[in-house]
Image (cartoon, rainbow, N blue to C red; front, side):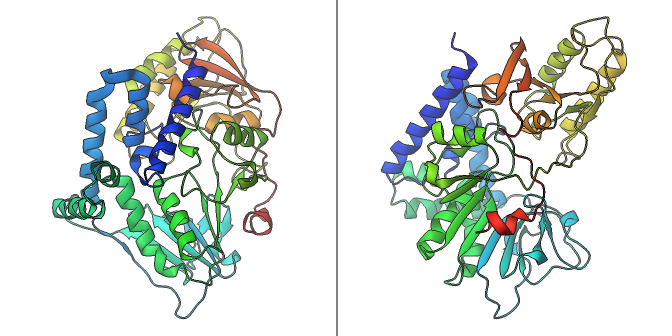
Amino acid sequence: MLKINNIQIQLIEKAKKYINKNSKKNINVHNSGCFYFCIWAPSPGFAILKLWKNGFKNIFNTIAIFFKDIISVSNLYNYCLINKLEKNKKYSKIIVSWGLKNNFLPEGSYNDRYFKINSRTTRETLWFLIYVDKFLPEKIDKNILILKKSKSKFKYNFFYLFKNIINKIISSKFSLKKIFHKISWSCEFSNIVFNNLKNFITSDVTTIIMPYECQPFQNKIFKMSKKISSKIKTIGYVHSFPMGLPINYICRDGSPEKLILNGSDQYYCFKNYLNWPSDKLQILPSIKFLKSSENMSGYIYLPPFLNSNDVIIKLLKKLLCSNEKLYIPNLKVKNHPVTGNSKKHLQIVKEINDMLSNNKNSFLKENYGKKLSIFIGATSAPIEALERGIKVIHICDDPVFQKYSSELWPSIRIKKINDNIYEYKLLQKGNLINLGDSSQIFENEYFN
């Protein structure tokens, strides 16, 4: 049986060939959901990876994911800009990010949680925010544009879906392959975002930057911006450390001309495995992860997406009950910040707390003391914890998609506890994430 590390590399190579092959056929590899190889949530790219990994025994699940993706297009019918900019104001730079109400200050300015800066500190800059909150701030500064889904009685609009399908069939000139790649949630959302932004991308704009995850809408903005003006500099910032299988970051049509990374291991992986030319990559200290931060030890961290609560509980119980003599440190469950209302997450929080309460006299074969945290599922949080001197245990319900390996990340050493549970150690601090000292580096280094 192939090692997990080898399977990961094989999947990356297969994905690169798949992107390259379709790019030569003028398929929209920049914004089709089939080429966004997200490994943490069900999407067309995720379904394709599962099919490559598991074979045709996964075919029915693949079909279900594609069907749901097409239906979800009907949920995109009511996005719009909810405010206007200051009249006759010219902007030389654009920052594209995500917005929440609690990111806004009472006077109307916006604190970006990725770049760790306030919207009023960036001169001649337009902030374009994709809003992911139900409630709007009371005041919004004049250099901030908000794209938001408006309220509606109906969650789905099937007339919108039908019209979208007809338009895509016509624009694809009845090419079945092109139709297949254009009729997807990712493709439609990327069109919505760009169509609301394009009127503000003028000849005065010199730079567009965004926290980058290689999402289809981001590639669409970068690709079309260069068509509007080849002089526009496109910059992406890998704001969080990539997942164990960073396959979503493969360089392709629509990728930024400059990609900012925060460590030598990231540079190594992106250059050697993800097709990024060295002249497009730049290593700078992180502005999201600063040297001063809250304590990360003593927690069980949950990811934003959960595959199976039952599997996770079983694996966690196996870990916690592996020895009857040692005492469990005061571990606390830490839910992911964006899943506070998720019934699935709230349920697993309760189950884990019950388990901790019932197994107070057992833990692992080694006494880790206080400097320990356990991480579950598809998450990059273990890497930040390693850089902060925390002992890390990673529970993977799908190791091929979630586990970190020394082949891709040379500064990590892995100890296998069992087929789904791994302990990580860091060889050299700063190679994974060069923790920053100040967010002031943004204007001096990131934005130039």
